[in-house]
Length: 103
Image (cartoon, rainbow, N blue to C red):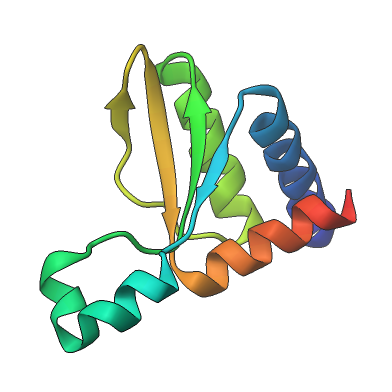
């Protein structure tokens, strides 16, 4: 039962990512190397999946699917007229990209 719920949540997340124009942000590794140890203070861009929602109801649905699929969601924020639900971290982004590749 729990496995079915996880798979359903993963499928719903993939659909939402594609239909609502979600996107992935990756750090520029070359820029990080150029900045050396200073990149932690200067260059803040990291690994991130951004899922977009049209309203609060859709945002809560995304957050539930993330939880059911085993992801840890970041704090949502406004991005233009939409709400953005970020998922941070290299491992989580890699796992999300695997879901996209499998479907």
